[in-house]
Image 1 (cartoon, rainbow, N blue to C red):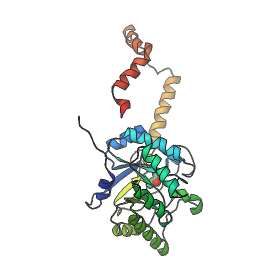
Image 2: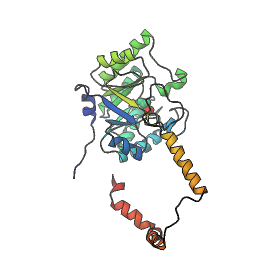
Image 3: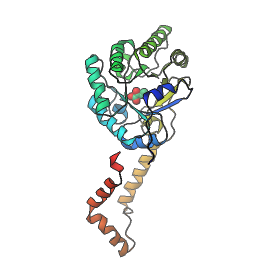
Length: 296
Ligand code: KIV
């Protein structure tokens, strides 16, 4: 039996030294994780964008640690190869290092993630240092910080002024010194992202930060065209699944109403073939369990 092993945190970090670009996508459930994992992404980020694209919230702020643990477990169950990184939601690390260790610990121990991501630079450096000390790998996140949306007042490009750019570079250096293994750079000028990338040994993963980052991350629902709320201009849509899903559901509704689905059995023999499955649904479940599908 061939076993595929997961991308590890050191492997992910060391890709930068080898000049290999990193491809990261968000995932929130087992089915999508399986499909994205199969495509060869390096990491699946269980982002707190969960709140907006899956749970129907207006921002990431209402997402809870329980939400994140629950969805991280699903992503881990659905994937075999990608590094799984779980976002620490709002208020799960800002209240102190003790809370941060306990909460990050749950994402690792109960969720099965290999690493956590948290937002901020020098303001959270004690937390990053402590998590790394106790063996929890940390990915940083600078630039547009969605958990601070009420302070920012909107999802706008950040660090456009020289002083803000200097602060961001200092934050990035501090995160690297504290032991972060990578840093997400969200919605910052291309030149600044390039400068931060050149200044660090750890990889930068850009989202709306241009092509000079060591890797890219996109919200999977955005790049698949599944989320038809606001989609940022930097997103490239590789599919338009929202339209496909609605069209498929529309066809189904029409078929049911028009008595086109289910199809009428062609003969008595067809009806006979259907009977055993109908009489014993338990057998179907047992066969599925036996197939190993649920055991991953
Ligand atoms: O929550 C999220 O999906 C993220 C990515 C946009 C980087 O933080």
